[in-house]
Image (tube, rainbow, N blue to C red; front, side, top):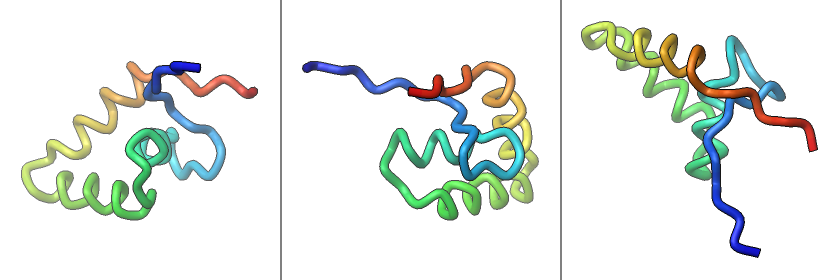
Length: 65
């Protein structure tokens, strides 16, 4: 009953590695807003790109249930 939420990379509707889709699903946001935030972060000092790569390496794939 008390299921905890976990952050995963989601392989459905992904563009590159599924990081943005997973974050959008976890926080109940529109995936396009999350993608836009990463793009803005990439152009504003490059941290969006670095964070995306780290998340793609560290986050596990969501299991198919």
